[in-house]
Length: 163
Image (cartoon, rainbow, N blue to C red):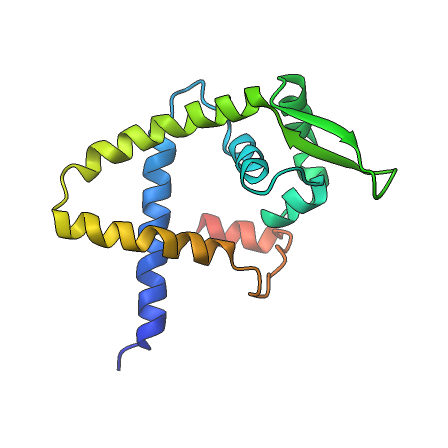
């Protein structure tokens, strides 16, 4: 008995997206921005000025987990931190022109690798990818799916993972 078609499709999409993401990470130069920095800059480029909490929540993290990343981006002049007008205790982060330039340069490396491998595809395959790309973005933007909080890894989990 086979699995439901939607589950099989979900598995195939997940596998393809994750494998492609790994290949794209491998196409980065050694001095490229870290994935965490790209994530923060990318979020700010797409959504504009945001709080650390909003950025962290979008990545399923707590703001404290990104504190060092925020500080490094600010020290490098890639983002600015200002007082939150709605909450005087909080801050809002904004990508700078330098941050936008750095993000675009970082993305360009991977875009060039991907464009080169896309050259091996037929026009039909390229057409399918052109149709699929916005769908993947739409899925990535979904916020109505319940988020499962990450649970701490226990010693039992570590033993199981190492087995």
